[in-house]
Image (tube, rainbow, N blue to C red; front, side, top):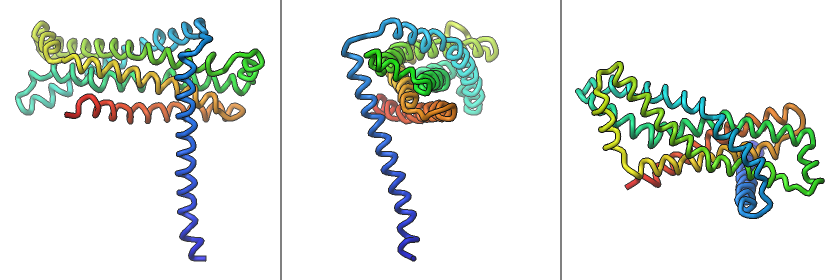
Amino acid sequence: MSAGIITHPLAALGRAVLGALAGLGRLTMFALATLRHMVTPPFYLREFVQALLNVGYLSLPVVGLTAFFTGGALALQIYSGGARFSAEAVVPQIVAIGMVRELGPVLVGLMIAARVTASVAAEIATMKVTEQIDALVTLSTHPMKYLTVPRVLAGLLTVPLLVGIGDIIGIYGGWLVSTQSLGFNSATYLKNTVDFLEPIDVISSLAKGAVFGFIATLMGCYYGMNSGRGAQGVGSATKSSVVAAAILILAANFLLTQAFFSA
């Protein structure tokens, strides 16, 4: 009796660990298969162009607004904190490095996870529930090539551009607040911003964008392809895809920051 009490929690823990490892293995195989299909024909150009519009162009408004208000709020916070130590002059430098290195890529990645990952997962899961994916197979069309590859490739290519645009808009938001509300000189603010940024900052920002775009679109496709049946399965796949994408983006951000900036 006592042995059963002791081993039951251990058995539950073991099942959880094995389940997590099995899920990680399935996700890794799915990612590797996606990369393999990217470099082998056939290619579906129409689906790719549609994915470019969905992932990139249609995400511009939410990315722009998020970056603008974040840059403005960051300038206010830095000015308020710097005033305690008579260091208000560091606002342009900190806004620039904060947006380009961290806030820009992470916020864009999370916005893409909220908007694109959920959309992709719900779309593909609905196709699975209504047996449209089975119909693709009967037409000799590989579902991964037709559904996954265009979306993941679009994420790889467009999210770095969105990150670059978000960085610029965020810095602009900080400049606008600083010059209109905090009394900074416009020319001096812009000069300090340009002089403080280094090429590695921009490179790391765009590299993070590519990784985050890959993660966000891959999670949507993976959970959509593996969704359960019915409306409940579609909802569960959508929720799980967004949660997984957000967690992996934050984890990848930590690893990439450590890789780029650890001395």
